[in-house]
Length: 339
Ligand code: FA5
Image (cartoon, rainbow, N blue to C red):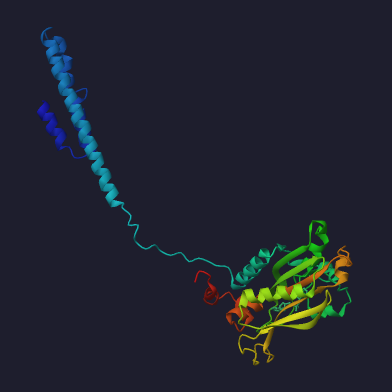
């Protein structure tokens, strides 16, 4: 019986058949249970011998069944592992990733530069009050210089900001000068009713800067603008400051950079001047300080507003500002920072 059982165990190749053998040999209706049940008919001398023998056969068969089951289970697991094996050396499918827009890259680079020089970043809203966009910047309602920036009005008092300069008035109003000078930089989108052409867009970007404290001079402004030009262009392009006019600065300047296209010779992009205007700046007008509640006798400083769109054109030789806003992926992926 034992030999027969062991043979059947050995021949079992899957979990079902090994289970059948177990039921057949060791189950309630199996031969071993039958022998044990028939013991009551045996004499008292035979009973222990038969009992011991039946138990030994049962134990051996149970052990053999367990062993065989383990063997079958591990063979099954090995087969499954082999089937599901992953070749980690196979190259993966690359996923197309986005990237910051080229103008955002320039803005990030500039903001990082200023943060490194101790400026705080203050972002304002694109829908602004006339009061902050113009009046508090020394531009009352009837001021002729309002024509310099043709404006999209939402209501007579609310407009799409034409410049990031309102952030000058807003930060001046809230800054606590007992804690030290104000050094802020404010990047963002601005809007003007400009006719779109190669260097003008009706929606573009500016990065505003404002430094107000004690003993700040025009030399500080010039040094700061030179650091900006150096950061973006190294020594490749020349910077020139030109006297200019803004109602909120006195004196005022505009900075031009050598035209990247004709290198100062004159072409259609720079309108034959050889230079491209990239920013406006100047020493903060006392009226702007007064209107924000800051004493111009005690405090003074400089402000600038630069155009990252134009910087991006200069840096990458882009001849039409409108290309930045067409969202043509073939154009935009040229400026992929990841290379
Ligand atoms: C201003 O907007 C002033 N708020 C700048 C300023 C700030 C002066 C602080 C003094 C103190 P302006 O209109 O020149 O100035 O514009 C500043 C820069 O924005 C320009 O030098 C140019 O780089 C950019 N810019 C102006 N108009 C456009 C346009 N339509 N498209 C693209 N860039 C423009």
